[in-house]
Image (tube, rainbow, N blue to C red; front, top):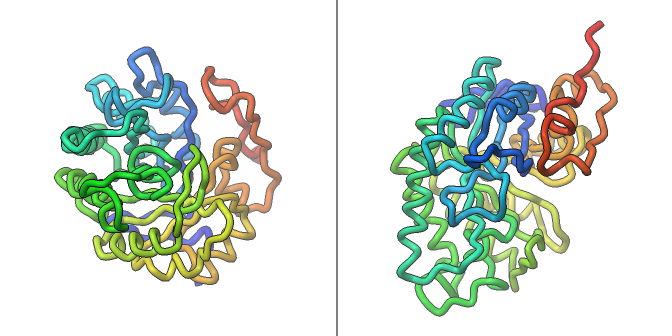
Length: 315
């Protein structure tokens, strides 16, 4: 029976443990909207995680939601992210970049191929930046999620109506990303009932069960699921996905251990806990107290609340 500290294989990658650092926006990119040396230090400090998934990285200037997110569409941004991947790899860590399009404008039918091409280009850039893989951000009310849920998708074309049609855009994005990455290095992030950005679906259990079955047939690296939200049968949803499942959403050490022991999850990701505890694996292993996240420093700024959280004292 696996525990949090047991190694696990995801496709060709062997991870040291089953703790995942979840993607968390920090809004500290430089003037070129690129990751930089301080970004590298932040992720390097947390390289003890079995896997790091970076903060959402816009695939194009049109995919931004606002300033401060490190993008992955330009050469400068690729170079900036390479500082991070090399720092994480030097400590034996594994790191995926989260590919993101915020979708501030709803694309017309003729615009969709161009957006898909932006994901393809970003995926190529991720290889150049020396990431171990990519996670496609299809959650939280951003562009792909807006296609998936019928509370936002009122289209009458091939991308609207049925569950299969609403999933079409995500499938096209995945096909495009596969031009640069084998499926075993591609993950997908979903949030079936998270209402963030005023999202809703008339039948999320059906919508996302169907999607989970389809994604399970692709042999992806993992499905990474934000389980926050009410009125959803997570156990039934999990049974629909045939593959590595990363659970996320308010987990602590005890809940994570229970999810692994029951077979509900293969790995568990932590957001704010990893933000405030760069050595979360060691703290969990030792049963040590945890640093408390300072929410006033979550977004923007410099080292304060970013790279200055203390590690356990070495005795």
